[in-house]
Image 1 (cartoon, rainbow, N blue to C red):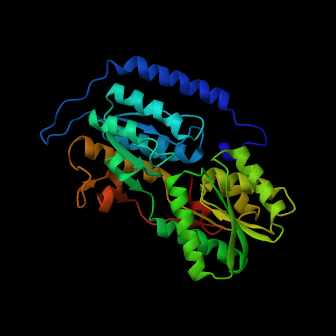
Image 2 (cartoon, rainbow, N blue to C red):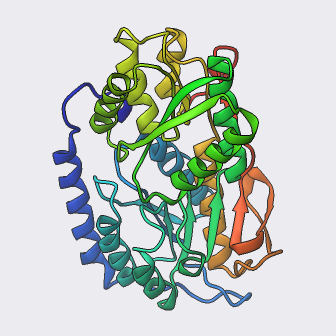
Image 3 (cartoon, helix red, strand yellow):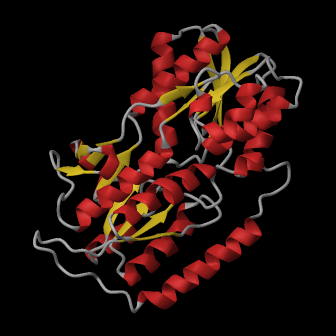
Length: 349
């Protein structure tokens, strides 16, 4: 998994080749793909659902897409596939959206690298009849049908702030190691967390926010730079699964282990070793597998006409039960969970 890569660049060449071959294959098959037949409700049965993550090779999206999303699509008899770039950039996602539109897939389930840069392509997709579901990281509301939100922005912000405050006794300098500077979700969480800290923990000071671009090596290097630049740093909050794992890897073998607290958003499997060796006390996350599962069922409900994305629409999401569409076309998965030594053994993703 990306979080366990040692210093040195990721195996992007192999992933890039795989993504390129797959993208070419999509183009070749696109012309022969149909749009599915209409159903009695006015929708269709074109359950060809493609997940487009921010980037491939991220263990978070392996859980949301390859586990939860795939299992849901398989359960309702659809066709699952995942495509995506090796670098977490909006421009790299555009070509995949355009190709999938040409293919007439039933739905694109997307985690966006930018809130507005993808809009032209996404609007063209919707005009062509492709349903657009965003999850994890949203685009502007008029550029998709529904956004499946993993947790409320305030809930995520408070969980991270409460965890770092608990780790360092509620006072001291902290830094944020975020993903990309344009990531919609990261920016919203960071803004809400800083505001919450300002009212709940006045003795905590956020000295800077740096961006590891959801790249393991960049995040690792940023962590090393932070502890050098800010000698009074007491803690780091990294609201990205790639960033927190890379930061933990750096701290675990440095003189700062046990001296600088680290928390944020991570997956239990990537963070388990760092919880056990004391590098990290706690971190938070929702279940990404459930998030992908819910996003897939949301796509199905849009395709078959059960929902249109308006406030008050409801649908059944398999094993997760019934969900409702809220304001701005948003479906909320639930509250984040905090993982520590007491419970991490109960989770495997």
